[in-house]
Image 1 (cartoon, rainbow, N blue to C red):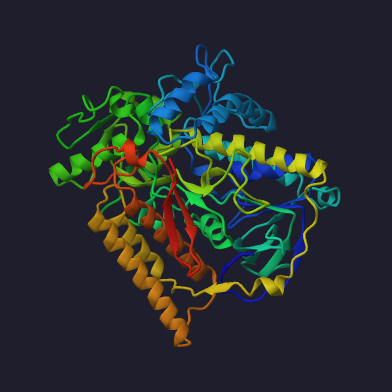
Image 2 (cartoon, helix red, strand yellow; image 1 turned 180 degrees about the vertical axis):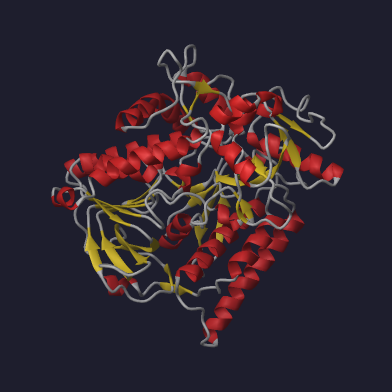
Length: 564
């Protein structure tokens, strides 16, 4: 049984399905389409509109060994190097060997990738890859095209006629709250809050045989991020409250080249894709010096953690707020055809990459860790699955290789659907009985006020960003603990924050931020995208292993090193 839950009203309505998928990016929609093909009823619950997830913001592309001379083994090697010693090699092998066919199936669904005059798919190169293996669409709008194709496929199954025949049911503008489990501890559905008015509104419950989390990342725990506003760590928080384990939460990738909008900019920031460097743009300081040359054999195309650290170090040395990405030598035609989205974004902010270098700095981009799963997407809680950025499959290790994230979502979503289909065929996926009222016996977590969100982001950016130390992490932990204490104090004084979307999101952010900080404090080394200034070296003897995070009985996250 779930031991903790968000403070929320009792569900006022109930729905039933076989598999409920939370999230509508490449991972969630792929699961939904495939389980429906297997004869299972599917429901997609998404926080905003169907196409508002992180997938559509992915510019660079999707990595797969499709080019002449490239092999899954070479893709495996590049992924393991980027992962800095703690990738699950078998998970990576699954990713790179099943990846090419998964991309071909995505094309069959309707995704149109860029092709040359000969009709062959065009491939580009990004950081950490020794070969051109990045499939892209619309130049720099790959995620948008993948999202378009999958959303179109799902919507054709979501008409009233299709639903009558067992299509995919959609619930948009819905924030998932907590997992429902039966008396045996098996997943039996979830509670959620639907925003706005309609046939279903307010808090409700969905009964299901299985739940698949595909909620994306947690970038909103930081002040500056490439993640959309909906990326508040809801899936990781739900899983922890339900008794599942998370892993590798300390490994947050900061994208090296995010458009710098000024010292006070907050929230989602425009990404300047790695593919721009892949096509030959240079990182320079204010004096025009290419500071990555000599720091790594791949220079600007080194793995992201190395580039982000180098930019941050150069900024510190020079007292600068940003560096520059110089692609003036591309010329107007290349910018307009290869990177139209980035060009438009820069020009909208008063910068013309055709005639001037782009000011850039690192920002939170991708969570390499998440809810711990096996290679079939199964978590510690029976019937609860996770895929995409919310999951930790082990493929990213300490640092995600560029453009492996869309591939991971695609490959492991297909594996989850196959596992569910196999269990259903074997009679191992029975309907579950759950007493929704009894589920409310779990300890209710007090909600912080909605304004706590900005304070959490400020604490995390200052104490657990690109540069970390024992002192900075302790400062963040103390600030987060104070927010939690105040929430409990308000509850005791009978002045609790109202349960609503903003306070539920603040509670989720507080939990995942506290969990991330606990793991970052434990890992006393520098590895991948976790950079400890007080422990600047990689320490394989003690730390070539994962940190597993669970929720203690009292409600706080606890991180424990995995046995070597």
